[in-house]
Length: 183
Image 1 (cartoon, rainbow, N blue to C red):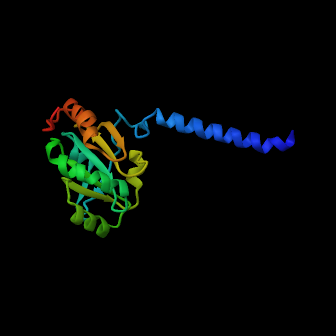
Image 2 (spheres, helix red, strand yellow):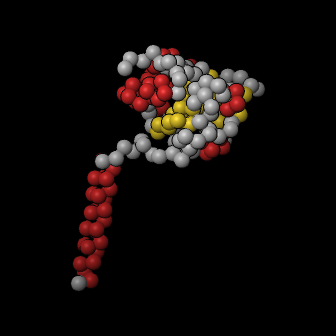
């Protein structure tokens, strides 16, 4: 009986692995619930990438909805997402704040120079401390913050045209923005 114990253990592990694959195929892995949805965005005061002696704070942005896109020059998925922002950012009817995460400023500037800059303003967080307060899991992540500073939406992973059309545009309309995107 003891000689079958390793075989039994192996079969249990294979079963658990198979169950995990089945479970993940039935759930949207980008829909990680955030405890900050419908709660106030954390206060922040971050330097601008192109003018590091100037800062952008949550208080400065109150009064109108805005998007925050967390990206980094070292992020492969950010490169996949970036053309989407280049194509759609200007038609969303809200500022798109670029949030450069744990990145040397010269690398972020070179990356944006090479791929284009769809952002209204780019802030930088080399230490990542503010990102912890936002609950950033990784990059890219995107947040919709309403005019009162409440987080209304969080998207983990690359934003796609379908995400913009099906999720973001309806939410933008709900917070009073006027996106140009087609229904």
